[in-house]
Length: 358
Image 1: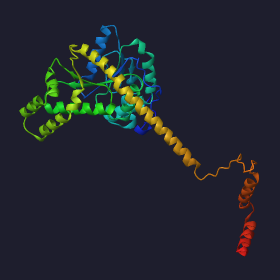
Image 2 (image 1 turned 180 degrees about the horizontal axis):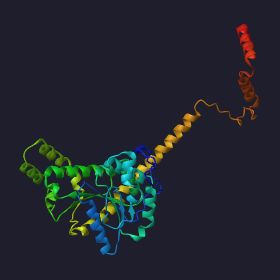
Image 3 (image 1 turned 120 degrees about the vertical axis):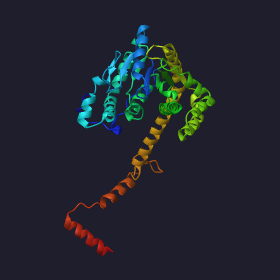
Image 4 (image 1 turned 45 degrees about the vertical axis):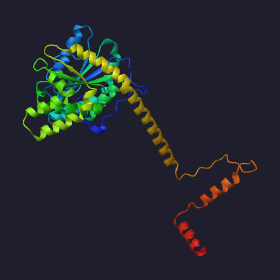
């Protein structure tokens, strides 16, 4: 696929066809790795890939970042082999973010082939890892990102991992911004969700876990900063997010040292079970509602198409049990008599006769 193709808009991106029998629960899970720019997504994928290879359980790795110059891990499917990022910028006159979204749109039109590859190779890997673009909004809030996520989730178990930079999150306001973004992604995808506090070798993220479990500790951290409108807003939002924190899985890792990756695999296994017990019933319910709605729309279109059309039952019988051919024939002849078959002169004569008759 080259950039010479016409640029697809979000509304023109086709829905990926999925089987109506439901997800294959026996298939190995896919993990979407999301996070803010600089949070260490690519380094995390690199370390997790090395961790799995060392245990003779290699992953299937997919790179969805078209703008990355070098991928530091072995990759099975690379968007850069399909779409040329710089050519897209040049041909369509776009900036970096617009080109990334266009590359994802182009990739999305062939993502059914990627799904086929994942399904075909499922027996050869332990988990499928998908590294997403550094500009998180280009994936999470785009039509192509939603289609890719939904296509994976409707095919086999899928988990979302949100990477947080622990060093930056020491600021309570930055921490709250990360949690709000994580909450929005969770409610947008409705998939099993894991928050990974990365860079534990720089700053131990135990402070973040305490803030999530105890509002008073978070309030004290806010008081240590200067009083401002943002502090008051963060305090209010922390109370709102209490329910979000309750069922949230969190893991502390260091992509530099390899710390915490046993916990990562445990969290993935638990999330797969959550996918089976929570997401699949919801998926089946939505699918059943969609089928019911489609059936109602089909019947409605049929009824509208039949409106105004007279239907003659040629098998209709009269009281004596004989076909009512005479009535039908006279009715049709009456309609034929009203059809004008002549030219202009004949039409004028007919009009004159009608005037004399009246």
